[in-house]
Amino acid sequence: MPINMKMLISALPLVLTLAACQTVPLAETSQTSFSAPASDQIGQVRIGTFHIPKEEPGTTLLLILGAAGGADIHYPVGASIFDITGETHYLGTLSIGRAAYSQAWIEHPVPAGKRTLMLVGAPAASRIAMAPGALMQHVDFIDVDVKPGGVSHIALSRYGLARHPYLGEIQMSAANRKYCEGLTGKPGEREKSAMGYMAENGIDPYARDFKNFCRLLSDSKHIISPTEESLRQFAELKPHIESLRTKHHEKWMSEAEKRAPYDLMHSYQPISAQEF
Image 1 (tube, rainbow, N blue to C red):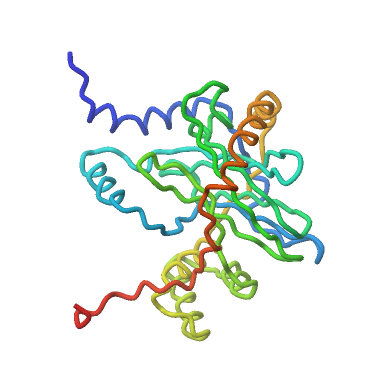
Image 2: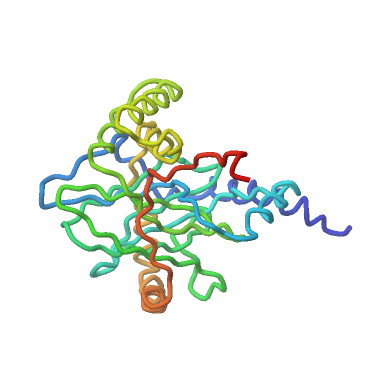
């Protein structure tokens, strides 16, 4: 019988999800609310999933065609995060996609100053990285300047036809962050409160990403920490992780596009018909 590629592609997310369910979890919930930096000398890097818009000519149409053809463009993927400022430290693995916790976060307390993080693609959160020798190993990096007593937000966003996750920083003031974290009530009530806050503080009502990120910060959440299984895998794969760092970081520093932190105040005001 000939293979129906359309059915095979459509079934792939279910296969990946079932496989992930049959493995030992790589992360566990350590707390259900954000913590503040311990002192003025300590900052915090907070990592979670949020889509930072990016111009991708041609990609949007192909993704629409893929979705129309039955393929799930939000199939689950994993992203393992490492702090490589000095020695390589494993921070945890996040799952991204419809079957994953969208409210899962990693909190990383660090001394104030510049930090460098590395992302290594993980196979649907069943392993913290592909096995050595794999043909396709996705890697990304970001530099972040952590302020004394401050919180730096790093977002995982998916781009390209392969839907790989990438690291990006989000720009948000401490006052706005604290307001958003303190929102309570049902989702619609929190959104209405956020819109009122935007009006009172002169924030463009079309800054939809501010409203969306504000709601995300107030959602129920899972602050995760590595499990014994993921730490065992890190010990096993550390030489491989170090080789990825050595191979890719210098190239990223010299060639990769270094984008400024994403400003949540970006306006998405509709174009007026009079402008045509």
